Length: 384
Ligand SMILES: Nc1nc2c(ncn2[C@@H]2O[C@H](COP(=O)(O)OP(=O)(O)OP(=O)(O)O)[C@@H](O)[C@H]2O)c(=O)[nH]1
Ligand SMILES: [Mg+2]
Image 1: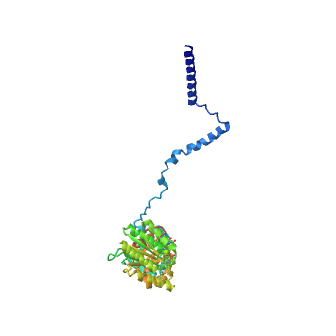
Image 2: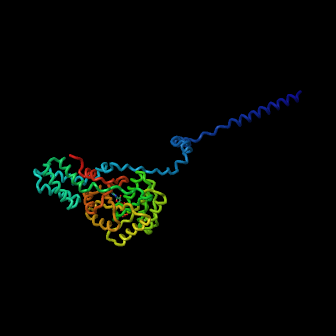
Image 3: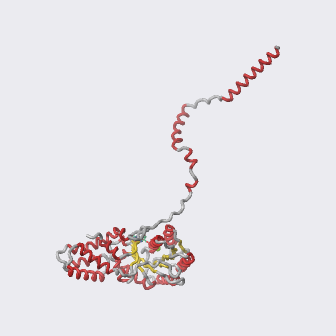
């Protein structure tokens, strides 16, 4: 019986000891409180933790670093570009309206009054011969009609300027395929006149009108020239054919047209290197480019790019180009940078070749189809 009591007591002691152990494990002793300095640090760090919650970092999707798919630009429609760009001709407008106002400031339309008009038109690069003709006709008509008001004089001057621009000329760009082959446009001109920029702008216009285009970088003097053209092409998704720096430009032009035929595109635009008209070797090279390209079929359009700011000097250069490559259309660039918009009249008159396009700025859509009425309207500014 004693043994039983002792055994029960031992069992009870063991049970109490075991329970005590379990309780101790479940409730670990709390860590000693951090020293005062550590507590200060914790409060300083806390705001940082709330500013950048861990979710933001974890949830950042990997797509964020991927390049976005290329987005092709949608060029502006060409209709109405000349009208919208009227403000760009402001400097030329000043000269033309000065001529008109000069007439009104005289009591009588005498020789002196008409001389002022002549000076204004010659100052605007209309050219001496064309100016004399325009003023003679204007003088005769105002005498017969007894015209005196500014609105009437503006109307008559506008008519004469439009007539001097020969509105019957065909100014359409021959960019449609001919006989199942792409149209081929060759772009030529002196250094820095705006050839590459114009190629890029034309490509945009054509793509906007639904044409497929291949660009040929036949300016092989500088690698940068082909890069410049490629940048324009990328923006509208056109293909560029280029050769190594120093390659034969005729070979690159030939390859571009071949590629255009293979790909079945509508238009091949060939950019050429700038060349001075008095460098015989370079002008011969240009002739060769055209001949080699024509092994595929005729060049449909040869565009001469002229910088309007070079004025009458540009006309002499132009004549040499027309001898070498049979220019079919003129692109007059940088009209926004001159007070001499009358150069359009002089160019057409001297060369007998239609101005088909005008450049009115450095922007990608600052190229407008040339229209005599709209242009003269822009030149003369708002009617009185
Ligand atoms: N303001 C203005 N600048 C223009 C116009 N057209 C071209 N330019 C500028 O003229 C400069 C020369 O243009 P490019 O297209 O490189 O001329 P380029 O004839 O190809 O020159 P090269 O290949 O070196 O002979 C560039 O800074 C163009 O932005 C225009 O209509 N208006
Ligand atoms: Mg160029």
